[in-house]
Image (cartoon, rainbow, N blue to C red):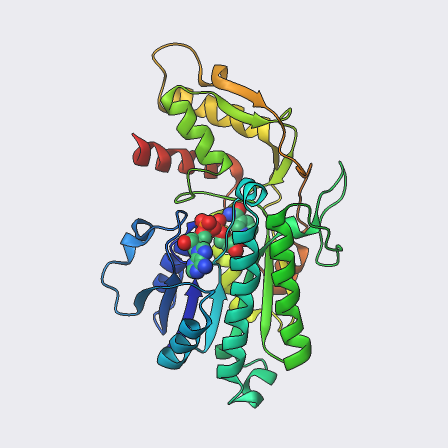
Length: 336
Ligand code: NAD
């Protein structure tokens, strides 16, 4: 069996990924390392049941002694690293946790992997699949776009929030371990995800939650900021493909070619909820309220996913109009 370390697997994307990966890869033993911050919950993993190929370990990626001991115990042949502080608003009010987890935590994992895999250097130099470090990152590292253009893997980094700066820093450290030590690393930079199990602090769950309780649905500025939305399971298939087939030392952008502005998203969800869970009186869109814009708020993100599409044959399956209905259904079930 191949032993794989997945970090942050109790969070939104990590938990969706683990459930998907275990279903499709019975030859892997997966250890999920997560310290269960406010953003992580084991409720996201109940579908796994008593699968013998899975083990949850509670622990902090910033604790180097602990991370080293885990590598010794399980002899991991690969790492897929999701764990992070991930909410931009929190990075503005309290950046320190972002630097600690996203920068120091990533360094700890990389360096523990290097120490562990050094004993078989000929393997990782040849891109040995089992000794790969896959870093999960974001398109926010590229900064903001104007009305035109798309982020490619060649777009210069220009992060604007403490969150994106911490992710950009960790991407650079990962890159250095390829160039300096010849470690087999890949990085994927993905656009905004949506779907089941996302923490309720994020935009789409907030719209649904506030709509249901009859409160104002807060939209930053004028709601014109554009994000490129990707259904979380499409992100999971992209990660699996890059982990298995991506070229060592490369980065791959993952995006759904689904650009929507925040006001469109809010109105779309409200309109769908008018049918799926009608209010006693009025329409949900009456609750939309504009609030003071977020400092450093990037105007537009959009991904050119040609590299992963052409090189690895990946394609997003879900279109936004169907994915958003599934997402609302999931939250209606969870919150009502
Ligand atoms: P999330 O906040 O839902 O989950 C993060 C998980 O990491 C949680 O379970 C948390 O408990 C765990 N964690 C945090 N600090 C830890 C620590 N010190 N030690 C161990 N575990 C720790 O985040 P998400 O939305 O699932 O994002 C996962 C990854 O994907 C992140 O690296 C994020 O930057 C990246 N990403 C997210 C999006 C998105 O739209 N959500 C888009 C692109 C990239």
